[in-house]
Every structure is written in C-alpha cells, then in structure tokens.
Image (cartoon, rainbow, N blue to C red; front, side, top):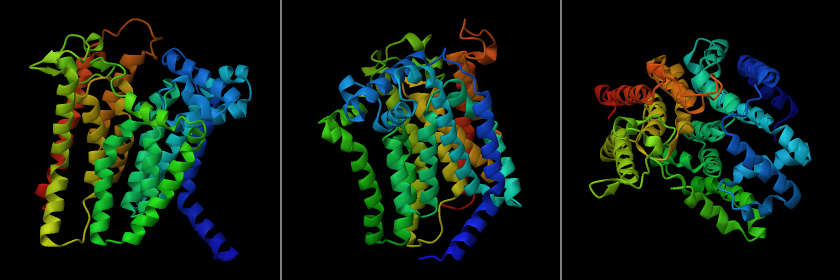
Length: 426
C-alpha cells in the first residue's frame, strides 16, 4: 500500500502535468452550461422517444425497458434511467431533456483529455500541448453533433479512442473493457475492432502472457454481466441481443443523410430503396462489398508489416502510431462513404481521430478536409443554422460537393498511409 505521502506526491505530479488541459476543459464545460442553445428542431423524434423511455423507466425500472420494443443498446438506457432518477418526474423529464447535451459534451471533453495524454510528449511543454487541443475543442465539426444536433455519437467515439489509447499503452484489460463499453453503446463502433485488435495482437506477439490475457478478460466479463443483470432478471436479455441484430436494415434507404459515394451514382439516394440494384445485387450488397474492399486496402500495410514481423521473427518495434491514427480517420469515413442507410452523423469519430492525427504529426490538411466535409454534411442534413427551412442552393452545400471532399480525404489518407512503404517500416 502506498503511504499518504506517496499518494500526495503522485497527485501533485498528476495535477502539475495536467493543470493546463484541466483548466481548458473546465472553462469549456462552464461556457457550454451557460450558453448551450436549447434547440430541438432536428432530432425531434429522438428526443420524443428518449422522453418516453425515461418516463417509462421512472415508473417501471430499467429492467423492463425492452418490453417497449426499444431499438437502442443498454448504455443509452442506463443514461436515460439515471437522468430520470435525477430529475424525478415526468414534467422534469420533458422540461430538461436538452440538458442531456451537457452529459454528451462532458464525455467528449474526456476524449480531448485522452488526445492530450497521447500527444503531450510531442510538444515543448504541457501547456503548449494543452493549447493545441483547442484545435479540436473549438472545431465546429466536433461540437455540432452534441451541442447543436443534440445527438450522442460523441459517447461511443470517446470510448473508442480511450480503448485505442490504452491498447497503445499496453493496458490490455482497460482497452478491452472500454471497447465493450463501445459495443454496448453503438454497434457501429465495431468497425474499429480490426485496428484495435491488431494493437492487442502486436503486443501479445511481442510478449505472450496467457495469465495477463485472462486477467484482462475478467473486467470485461464482470462489466458485461453487470450491465445485463437487470434484463436477465426481467427475462429480456435475449431482446438486448435481438436489438443489436435488428438495427441492421431498419431504414432501407440508400442514404439517410450521408453525402457519400452514392450521390455520384443515383439522382436522389435519400429516396431510393437500397433493396433495389443492378447485376443481381442490391445497392446494400454493392455498398457492403465496396466497404469491405476499402477496409482491406486500408489494412494492407498492416498485414504486410505483420507477416514480415513473423517471418523475420523480429518482434521488437511497433507499427507507427501516426499511421494507426490515420486508419482511425479512414475507417469511419469508408464505413460512411460506401455503405447504404448511413446518417450524416456516422462519420463523427473521424473528427476526434483526425484531430489526434493532426496534433500528433502537425499535419493538418486531412483533418481540415474531413472536418469541413463533416460539418457541411451535418448542416445539409439538419439545417440548424438556417432554421430547418428549405434546402441550401449554394454549391458548397450540395451533397456531391461534400462527397467530393470525403473522397479527397480517402485519397490523401491512403497516400499517407501507404507511405510506410517509403519509410521502410514494412
């Protein structure tokens, strides 16, 4: 056990190293509490169902929520249940529903803190590292989803990045735990599994420790059982798994607001059923094939690197962190860009990984492009800044222009990613 003096010294060292970033994050939190807009026009359906679910759980407990036929995974219901318990009445649930933005924003601040932890040794001092994090914190593309749109994509994004961070730091147990928090929040976080699993595998192949793996799985198993216990008691645990499966194909349109590849192929993907298609394949199947192909292309450098590492039996060294961060940008973009049924929000995680990549490498072009494309796409879909009225007519507010920006992100990103060959890393 550490002595009180040692604990004090550890705390003093921690606050000295993190003082600047903590002040910045605290200031951002206070400003948002004071100035957060009470906007409800976009996402009205989401807030209506959140009110309904929260009120139901207030009366019937969280264990019975899946009897309503809800289509969200458990973490969402825990958030709404805690919210309902705090506000305490149906009237308060309705009145304060937009305060949930504060919770989502708080989680996103945590994501910026972990970016700071990752990049701080690449700057002259901790204050400078904290200040450059403002490039993410003040990015309209990062703030739009939670502060204006009132959506929760920042939650799974943050936990994905935390899992990634702990994987890099060889904290296998924490990395696995946070990744399964992601999967209990939004299944689209699953697209990051190959990248994070590669980091786990590279760590293990360098020093294989079965006992460590077993110990790493224990927190995950405890967490997963605990989160499912209420639904086991009510006999609804199978409905939880069914919810995850049934989310696929719920909105069978080629696009649900994503300005992506399909706008170059179809006149209006927003009104085209993805069950239609050509050459005996539906648009959904074609999109999935293109997505899988793009993922393989992204992972070719990793596969070659890993095969060479095994063949040479040289297990020292690690795949470059900057290339992994770049993959963290490209993976959600190709998921969003080629698949059907994509919402405008589904590229959200590219912003946090893109910001981390920019600050880690001091290369800002890809981050600027993906931020611009994502911000424009959200505004095209939600039209919050113009009052949710008629469509934009400006050329840069058209889906094909935004899709071109996302396409440029993919081209530049893949060019930089394949630079590992030039640097003789693989």
